[in-house]
Image (cartoon, rainbow, N blue to C red; front, top):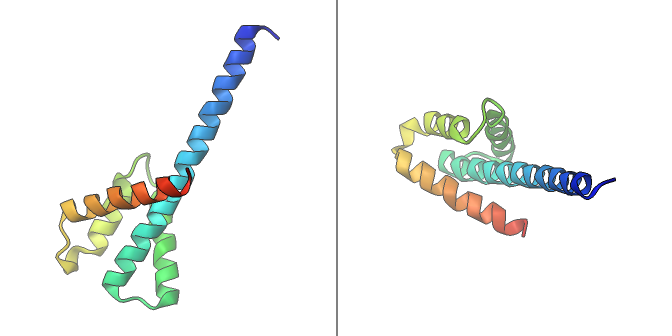
Length: 102
């Protein structure tokens, strides 16, 4: 195997690792967002678990975070939570999730 081939394989492995890590961070963040919103709704543990799963599944609708944002925004529409507050909470919980994988 040439040096170029070895470098290419190395970059492919790093890319795959980075993608997997980002997926795990996003899933963890979505779990935390589900927990946060569940507290606002006053859900019991079973309802909370179900809601968290719905937030995690919402992330598979499209690439990026907008699908999760839209879901949480729609769910919280009757609770006077601003778009800015939701986005700020998503950013905060994303940082928390990142720190857990370092």
